[in-house]
Image (tube, rainbow, N blue to C red):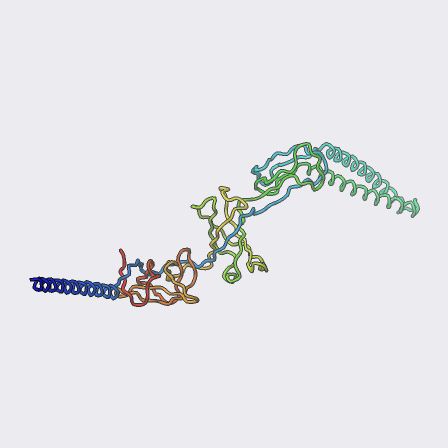
Length: 367
């Protein structure tokens, strides 16, 4: 009985082991097949766009600073007490506007003295002329000596010289009197006032600093590589942080004759209309200088390109597979890059997921 029961248990145990081994082999084999199948049929999800051509203008990017178009120091040209000054910092001035006045009392008196001196010399000149005419007639009749005639001739010449000097002195006195009133040499704004009424000023004393901000000047530098592309008359656009959503435009007016040795860059100037006075000297500007007319170029997002050393490549979708394209880049247009060789336009360019791809792998373009 015992032997029969032991044999039966052995058979049952042997059967269970066979079932277990078969189950293990089935599971292991099934997993291996699924893994192999996953490797062979792996599909990469990507995003793609159609490569297109756009009509774009070539340009040069730079950074610059806004400066006043003109800046002058208005100074006194005479000595005296400043009677009044009509402007303060920030005041708008027009060309020819009275901005300051020096006490004119002494200069008016000087004009009167010069006028009196001229009248006296005119009288002396008149007397000398009368005497000359009388002695000239007598000399012709030999009723006066040659010495007497020469004396009156010399007196007449001296009187004429005195009259000319008196006229010059009067002109100078009047000129000084006119300079007691000081006018703005240009239209603009007062940047700084250096004196106040009651100050004693001398010839050359600065009174106010004037700046002209309409138009305003934009100064920026162009790197050595781009120097050959620029010329006066080219139009440009720029933005400033104060008005980030507004675009300003100007025209290149001046190109400096030399490059800065330290930076290897060329400084240039553009003139910008500023009738609303939004732009202020000292503002930082991001500049785009257009160097030619619009032309059709193939452009792609910069983020779609892959860089390996000196080579640049991109991936396109062909028949559900990724195909590698070696490309040659040109000019940068904001977030896009010009493609000079490798893409013609119309290709389906992978823009997201290209970092994990290799030639020929299957891809699924997400919609």
